[in-house]
Image (cartoon, rainbow, N blue to C red; front, side, top):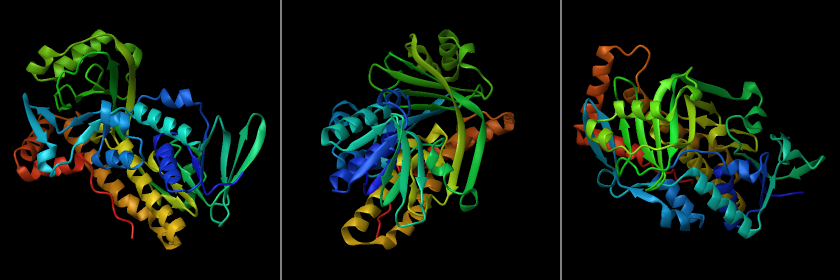
Length: 394
């Protein structure tokens, strides 16, 4: 089998890249080691930057998002007993964010790919890239007990942190940068109305809390917990009581509780590899970088990688601009590190660290007070939250 672009991974980044390439007339095949149902079972983020929303519209997969998604023009920071509103739309000249779950994005992209007849091979085992430094790279994989070969021009590694794409690059050809935080987020999904019409990020002496949502009837709440905590030690009642303790009184009083339909603990870490390409293999999304969820950047960074790679490949096939291939990593990393910085800042000022004493707590609160009390500070927060602009490929 032969294609122009081979994509490893049928998560949202791989599917979005495949959809954009297909619309541009560039043949592509996606290899995914899991089943479609498994891919759709992953519970992930749901805050989409303006740039990702625009990219989904460009890919013609936005109909359900535009009909069912919730446009948010701001969010709130809660600290020191007060709530401060960040007016995204006013501070950024009209930009907003969209509340629409990653699972739904994936579902829409799967449906679009099936409708256009583009090929996805699910349950492809032992996928391996070969000859990535040559002008004739290829992949091998196992399916139904047989070994198959997929020849291609380029390989996009959209298979996540644990995927084979990054692991196929020689260790002496990439450098990893990492920070592991000493806590995690205990999150629950519940069929309850949101406590607030916009997201609330709370700094509290007991630890961080986040009030988020998936719709007007389904909520996603988080509380910071120690890294060694176990989900089974947290009953629904214990979670709700802890969340209430970390919220301003007016929010705590109107919080509607209910049985959780999903509960998990996510560790927090920052991770980046440089460069994000090796020969004709390009790393996309979590395969190359991870951010703490505090700034809502993970899925959005993957989308900006997709946009960059798509723009480059469009010019390669449409204009013969193979010189642009070498720019992929540097263009992506400029935006990646700025998103890492924002996520690090949000994490630093909102969480309780093991060494947080009374002085450090006051510094955190004063940092937040300074930023929200200054128009320049609020604008800095807002422009990072809605997403920095995608870089033009020239």
